[in-house]
Amino acid sequence: MINIILVVIQLAVTSVVGIYFFKQLRKEKKPSQDKRAGGGKEMEKLQKMRAVRLSEPLSERVRPATFADIIGQQDGIKALKILLNGPNPQHVLIYGPPGVGKTCAARLALEVAKLSRETPFLPDAPFIEVDATAVRFDERSIADPLLGSVHDPIYQGAGPLGVAGVPQPKPGAVSKAHGGVLFLDEIGELHPTQMNKLLKVLEDRKVMFDSAYYNPDDTAVPKYIHEIFKKGMPADFRLVGATTRGPENIPPALRSRCMEIYFRALEPAEISQIAKGAAVRAGFRMEEEQCALIGKYAACGRDAVNIVQMAAGLAQSEDRFVITSEDIEWVADSSHYSPRPDQIAQRDNQVGCVHGLAVYGASQGAVMEIEAVTMLGTGKVTVTGIVDEEELGGEGHRMRRKSTARGSAENVATLLRRMGYASTVTDLHINFPGGAPVDGPSAGVAMAVAACSALTGVAADGTTAMTGEVSVRGEIKPVGGVPAKIEAAERAGLSRVLIPRANWQERFRDMGIDVVPVDRLETALNMMLGLSDVKAAHENKILPMEPLVAKGMD
Image 1: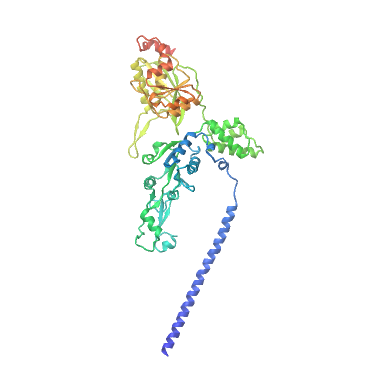
Image 2: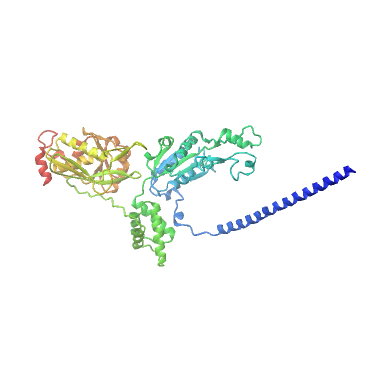
C-alpha cells in the first residue's frame, strides 16, 4: 500500500514538473516566432530598399571597359600585362597620380592574363579590391579584414561552435584573393604592423592563426579548423599595389618584393579626349574648343568627368543640350579649378636665358626658365627662386642641409672661374622664375650655360633644353627622370635636348626631338653659345674678363 502511494506521488510530481517545463518551452517558442515575424518585416523592408535605384553617375558610365578606354598609359599597361601574363606572374607596385586608370588597368590585366596559354590563373580567379586607407587595424587582432582573424568563443555571436568552446578562423582579403589578384589601393597608407604581416604572407603564401582557446587534442573541433591552425589559411595570390606616393615613401622591404611600373600624369590633350567621351555618354554636345578648355583646368580624367557632369547639369537647367565655354568657366570658377600654365617655350635666342628641365609630382617633366645677369661687384654668386632646403633623417633625428641646387650653383661658379669666365670684380645672379620649387643638381649644366651667356654677352640657343649635373672638373654627370624631361621639351615645342651621355638610351633615337648626349661642359657651351667662334687670347681660353663683362652689360 505504501509503495502504491509513493508511486502515485512520484507520478504527480513528474506531471507537475513536466507541465511546468512544457509551458516554459511554449513561452520560449513565442519570442522566436516574433523574431521570425520581425525578420520577415526586415526582409520586406530590405527588398523595398533594393527596388529603389537612382540613375547611374556619369563617373560610372565612363569607367574604362577595355584597355583602349584608358587614355595615355600605353607604356604602363604594356608593363602591367607583361608582369601578370605568362607562367610566372609577379607582384606589382603601380605609381601614379589619382584618376589615371590604375585600378581599371589592374582588373583588365587579370582578365587578359587568364587567357594566356601558360597562366597559373584559373578562369574563375578572383580580383579582390581593398582600400588601404579604410582597412581597420586592431592591435588585439579581434578584427583584421586584410589578413583575417580568429573569432574566439568569448566574443558575442560566436555561434554554435563558439558555445562549444571552438575558436573560428575568419579569412581576410589575402585569403579571399587566393589564386587571383589582391589589388591594394593606396598601399602606402597601410599601417606599418599590417605591412610587416603582409610581407610575411607574401613570403609564405599562407596566413597563420593563433588562439589561446585552441586545443589540438579537442575532438569537438572540426577537422578543417584543426587543418587551418596547423598549416595555415591559403593565401597564394599576386599583389598589385597602387599608390599616389613616390617610391621613396614605400618601405624598401615591400619594393624589393615587387616589380615597379609608373602611370604618368595626363596631358591636356588626353584629358580633353576623356572630357569629349564623357559628354557623349551624358547625352550632351561639346565642341573641340570646350574640350580643350576642360583639358586646361582638369588635372586628371576624374576631374574632367566631374567638370562635364556639372556643366551638363547647368546646361540642362536651362533646357540646353550643348555645353558652352561659359558653362565650363563657371564650373571652374565655382569649384576653384586653377588653369594649368601653357608649356610652350619661347624659342628666341637670349643672353643669359636658357631652358632647363625638371621632374615633379608623379614623374612629370617640365621645362623651366633659368636666367642669369652680371653686374660689377666682388665675385659674389646669388641664387634666387624657390630653391628648397632638404630635410633628412627619420623620427627623432632630423637634419637640414643646404639645397643641392644651391650647392650645384657654387660648383658652377667655381668651374667658370677655373675656365676663365669669371672675375673678382663681377657679381653673378642666377634666378629660377615661375615659382616652381627647384632642388637637386640636375640644373647644373643649364645654370652654367646661362651664367656663361651672361658673362660673355653671347645669346644662348633658344630651341634647346638641357639637363645634367656639372662637376667642378667640368664633367656632366647622369641625373634622374630623363625620359620625362625629354617628353616635356618636345611638348614645349623645342627641337633639341642635351642630356648626360651616361643617360643615353637607344630608344631616344626614335623620339620626336633631337636628343644629344654630352659628357663635358665645354661641349655644351659650344653647342649652346657657339663659343668656338669667339676669338680667345689663348687656345681653349676665354678673352680677358673685363671686356666681356662690359659687352654683357651693354
